[in-house]
Amino acid sequence: KGLIIFVVYEVLLYNTDMSESMNYDITGEVTTQWIEFVQQFYDFRESISDFFNNALGSRFQWI
Image 1 (cartoon, one colour):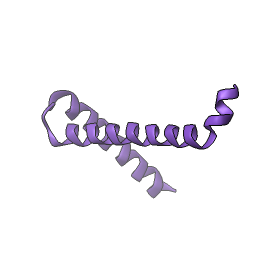
Image 2: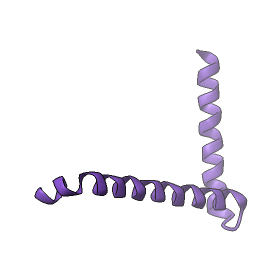
Image 3: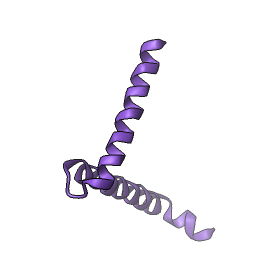
Image 4: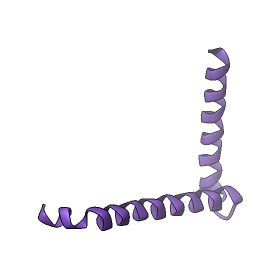
């Protein structure tokens, strides 16, 4: 259990370091990776909503 807690702590520490470096280093690699991740997430969410609209569109129109 101690190892798992240590790994989670390291991940949280690394994420806070990333967020701090994002604030200061706008043109840095971390920021571009984060922007790409956000764009991929929104694209994924749009594709999911499109899928549901296509598959269940006739049902949603009744609501």
